[in-house]
Image 1 (tube, rainbow, N blue to C red):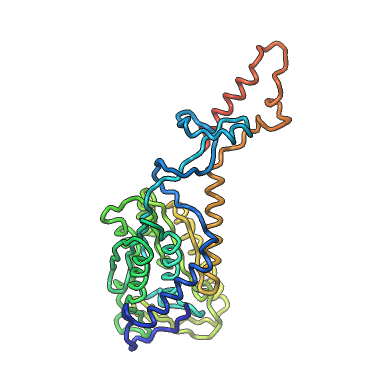
Image 2: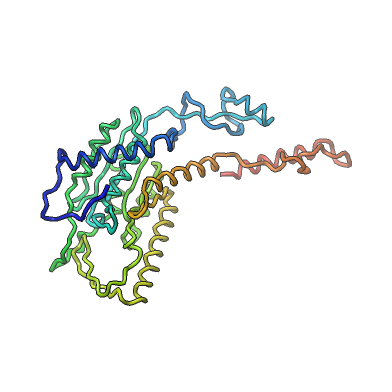
Length: 366
């Protein structure tokens, strides 16, 4: 996955280029060898449905099918439990991959563009099972490019081969007349990801989210209302801090605008660091409000380990969210767990109050 800086005069790779085939083979081997077996499990879609394989057990609620009673757990806990079912349906994944000029940047052994394609490969190989399909919308300097969804690993290889051959168009020299209209419109691309209307599934947005405005938050919310949404933020360490190298000429890779930055100023470097950290926190907050999972990949870290940690943490939090709340009235030593005391009150009053309290807590639980 190492890639030197692109030479604008060099010919662009084609789908049959040996370099593209080597990169594609290296990606597949890296993902399957290091991730396969570490992230096992089935996709749980947004739609409820009947299946044939048992999932986790949970407490019985009014309206549950009694044929799904989990008698073993019920006997151990003395509380009625039912088991959920894994829905038998295909998973359709659509990815918006930002391959604009701002992604053709990297100060380590890998560029952000290569890391974005690697993230799509990891997600694709982990979800490429029988019947599952994956498509993509590549956001290129020439405009969006739709790659149709195809099933299986052969369809995924075709998708990755297309992404690897997208022409590069970064400006390495300033333009006499910078073009502000050439800046990436991420909001419009996200809104177009679900047009035409696609079946419910997994939607992935891979970008650096460097735009100062957060206009993409609203279309992300609309997308999350219909699909399971994952945002992959690709960063380079040089975008977070400035080095002290004197007067640094910087060219906007998309618009061609030239800006000279006096990096010898300690105050300016500190202001830049704080502004970059504030922007990152705003992006994270906007993604959280939109209801999207947030995976951060950096060019100076092991992106496979980052993916493993993210998926493991997501599964842990999902399991905690699905786990029923602990009822303290059933814990040993709790006053309500003891037999009701005889006195002025009628027998069984404490048990009735405890049951009513449990119903109230279950109704208020999300």
